[in-house]
Image 1: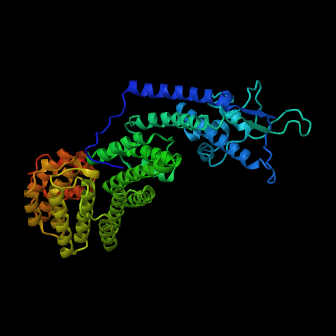
Image 2 (image 1 turned 180 degrees about the vertical axis):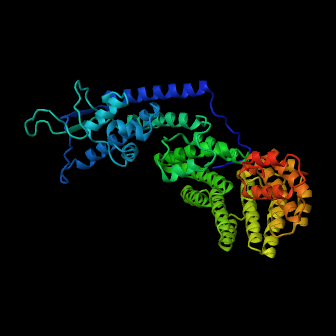
Image 3 (image 1 turned 90 degrees about the horizontal axis):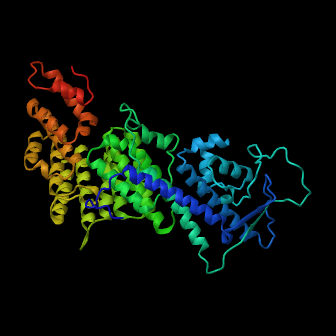
Length: 524
């Protein structure tokens, strides 16, 4: 997958576009039901019993008939998922109406447990307004009640009404199997795409706990989501990565859980090359989540999603996405005191994608980014010599790349190397050197708002370390203008502001109490 920064960010569809998507979903479901009922696809059920009799192992036709039954059960799950999403119901909603848990409904929809209970199929058809024929059931004037058992029905002669499913297969050159799968995928995809493109609801999560959406996704009830076409998932992932670089963290706290749930559903329903592509996009979504959790200073959640990013990237098989996932994991390792291991992981990741001969801009950018982060990690660990060597190698990669760019969402280039030089000098205690590096940069040349905010915060930290409150405060104000969320969420900004408030007894720093309130701190 190519995630070049030049790819256009797609805005969420307008209200009319969303209505069109939902209308298309209804049309897709109607076509799907028509297909399932059509003679070449007819499934005839006789003997409407509450329990199916297993086929004997020595029956010659057991294997093909069992395969047909399994395929029908999987199709039923896909129909239920598409209809549920079209009706706007969560897994829990549907479960309550049918007497099942949300997790059990999920297993039915995903085909983990076959939907073969005829009574349940009829209840689902009634609840979701699906014609019984879509499940291969004959219309029934008085459907029986009860979750599993049929009550009040007359006894039938033994052997006269055993469950029997007769499947009429199309001719060898017919298009039925392919067409059926396409319509099932289209119906589910329309529902998932409509949900994925729906704008986030303001205030969906309390500002006091912006990580709650990711936490609920990982440890609570999973966000209801269906699969979408891979191109739609790619566009949504690009938007999420772009939102992070624009420092739109509040938006991401709402949209990322839905994106990860959708990416997971898409991966689970895909096969072959599409499964690999969906796994890579799921890794990208988890990488965005890890980056966000780091900004929110939630290292435990950051570690969890970074590890999931690594697993998804390994399944996807894209080397540069895998390298980015290793960078995210190494960042959390550094923040939790595992600095040497973090540096080793970064250097190993860089070695695995080291450009030799002709290299793409994405490869050069990811390689240089790994070296930058390794250099900063070495500096945090107190290794000045290693930091100097690694940032020098990153500088060589930037020179080879050329002008500043944003390939693979790295914002890598000469300006970004200079930004890391500011950070490295500051963390090594060389405040004057950090400011000298900062003066070589024009902030406007830094390609993303997130990096501009980070630049100004590093400048503020250097001035604060140097004991210069006035330029420190000015740098904080510049950071706020560039990326307001950066100053709201970053702990170093809160610490510096608290120190400035305590020291500014003559009120020389005009507007400091207001700045303090804007970033969520009480004025002293």
